[in-house]
Image (cartoon, rainbow over all chains, first blue to last red; front, top):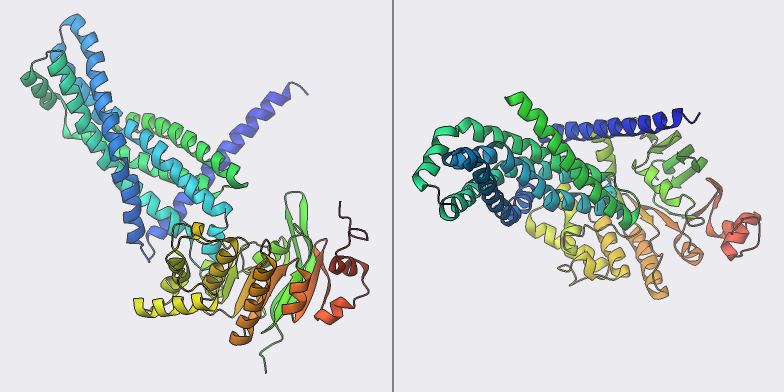
Length: 258
Length: 254
């Protein structure tokens, strides 16, 4: 009796996880179906693009700059042990383009916009605004979810380009001006070792991360229950679930693309 | 003559949420072009009845008929067509809080008509005037009082001039003057447009004032339905206890 209890608990967790994954995939399917069907609400998409993209610019720039800077510091420390300081630039650039740019941008946007999506949609749920949409014969997946998902999938790669660029600038400032690496070598090694392919891979990942963070945010909001407390819970769960899923997806995508 | 007597009919509807049985074989018919008021205790499932009528909730068992047609098997598209014939005033109005009052009332018009901007403005101003909110169109819902929110919600519900309007506790939480104003508004709207109205309420005086038919919900069933006079003179002990607001009686209050 006591022996089976931990197993039961584990089973429940697994079942809950699977159930949730299934529900999120269903929401994705509905979203894709609505993508094929008019009316397309470009105004709402633009509004979300502004919210997800333009308003995340500051945080993306700050994240990129400091990440590039600290990465230059750390690699310099390691590489100077065997005289490979000239490779600091290309290492920073590669890491940013392939990994840090898309992942850190996605995590920051999850915290900023994914959470806001869960809170906004969740509030609409608990105040019956979603029911009101149904009653007025407007599908909430088409009206609320699709614009957010579309905007996120489009904006995340753009933000990632910014993060990559600013990150390399940060690495340049630290590497060349603080640590005294030769500027010409710093840039030449980046050009030599970073392929457009590396950057494209990162941008592809960013688009997938955008899909994940918006879909999870909307999903958690859509199934919110229990008033203000429920909205708080949905927001937290959205950030946690989206962040973990982004990191897991990052591994899978990277492994597949190598 | 009217097409048929009942525009909405619920037949033996059962609905549970988890272990809690909310509707237990409820049957009710809503006459066309009349005001039906459903009374009963708070938390007794009155809103659930309304949500069944418009397909927001599906019954576990039983039928919901609109114009004699079972709405259960309808797909999304047909259900949307059906819903365009309804307007609904939610308990807390459910105004979209990202839009102004004007945009809220304009929303169903923008979605389901081809009106140009001038026509939309005209219709919205007219509806806002009907509910006494002229000049409040540019406010956000959060800037309105409870009574104003309900009136704005009503303006949105009647924007498309639907055949059927569902009111979920339109007067709960309002002061007596506003309660009377809203009751008159429901009555006038019905008189003027000849619509069918279903009103959820536990305000018994308001029910006498507006209803053509009163139905009493108790323990998941309609235990009495009839004209206000018939309800007032009902010899059912449960009905008598409710309409006189007594804590003692067959209904266990605490």
